[in-house]
Image (cartoon, rainbow, N blue to C red; front, side):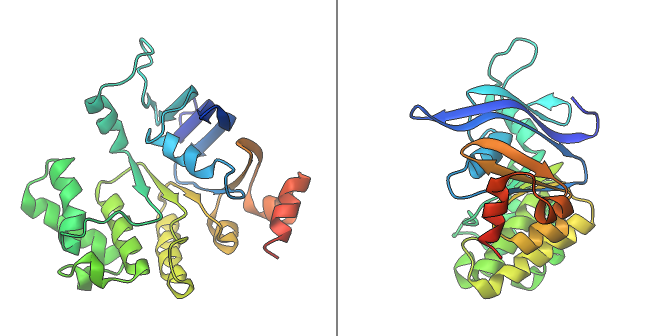
Length: 253
């Protein structure tokens, strides 16, 4: 395992109903890097992301968060307890397509709740952290309203603030703009670009080619569950090695 890696995926495979959706994936995400994962629908992108924080359980392979294996104990190869798993998951923030905000809580308490329940912070400290993160994503003025009153872009920015509040080592984004109206995409990508400039480690499943080109340190392409290409963005977009990637990029031209 690499000492500077935030996440390391080793020989990962996953099946659903006998169909192999990930096949022998190896991927290292270094600290401070942005890795964009591209591919057509059904290529295994979201499944790979969900395996990284054990929302999906791989059939084979290992995943390390920093120097700790997630999901399975290295010493005896047995599944982790829920408590052990929760502790490692704190280090891996997840931002979903559909926001997953709690509708019965106002925006401030949506961000505070994980701090109270997961980090066991006192309420004044949790509120201070939540306000700081809402300000970072430009949502401080909405702290007292409920999710139903927000646009999709605003909801996603709150979801990002909620993930940031737990101070994760790495942020996972599962197509964070796919549920948004086109005019709202830019506000979410703007926050993500800001985070990349601040040195956050991010793994992003996305169809936003301009974002992947401008912000990524590495671009990964999956096809039918296999990682068929990985390269810096300039090389990936300007001189792809595989015919399949060239075909994929043509569809976005």
